[in-house]
Amino acid sequence: MLARNFKNKVFFKKNEALGFSPARAERCLKTVSRTIAPLVDSLLSIIFPCTCRLCHKIVGDSAFGVVCEGCWNKIKAIEDPFCSVCGYPFVSKCVEPGALCGSCRHQLFAFDFARSYSSFSDPLKEIIHQFKYCGHLSLARPLGRHLQAVYHSFPAALRSDVIIPVPLHKARERERGFNQAAELAKQLSGLTRIPFQPGWFVRTRPTEVQAGLSRRQRRMNLKGAFQVSRRAVLANRDILLLDDVFTTGATLNECATILKRSGCRRVNVLTIARVSRD
Ligand SMILES: [Zn+2]
Ligand SMILES: [Zn+2]
Image (cartoon, helix red, strand yellow):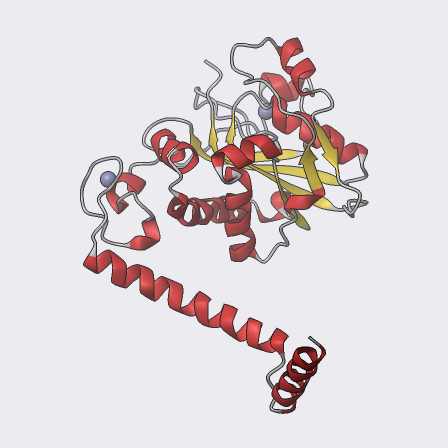
């Protein structure tokens, strides 16, 4: 054992002398794998062409994940007019600039600003289903690019210091194998260089599905479900809270309330899709 330790030390010292420390070697390996991964993806997609999970046509470019470019192009981004705070799209086109939706007029949300890429309707609804419930993680990359486009459309209002995904309870994450919000946050962090801190905010107990619950029941269901971790540094920080779908806003609102109580200056919300209230 002693002899092995001694040999390892000599090995590392020799490599360090040659400019190859284990940390540097690891960094090199990571850079090489980051460079090679897209090439391997492209090669594999030529040998084994993937079919679109929505329309069954061949997916020409692996950058789109398991959905073809044609299906992605059918998604319509949310356009003006929308609520100036939470981004809820108005049905009527004759709306004053800066208009607020009913929830924002009554100051029901604890977050400061929210935007979503598109409405929660097909084909985006099916893409999110494929990503979340069928485990097609290749969709995180193109979804992340859409989040980046929304982020850059509102540079001043969405400007944030840290990205925090809405956490899943550990048991749910084990069952699914991943947290969809954290996968999206990771992609957005890579594209915007905003640090991503999934461990700063945790779900301490599982919650029931919110669908079908009244506003009061939703509040009770979420009460005490989230907690800021002890290592989080939130004081005076602007947070970008990330999730896949903005449904009623109850979960995002509960998260924002706790983050604000922990000292955050501002909580901005970014989601892929927004559910219509009608
Ligand atoms: Zn398709
Ligand atoms: Zn609003």
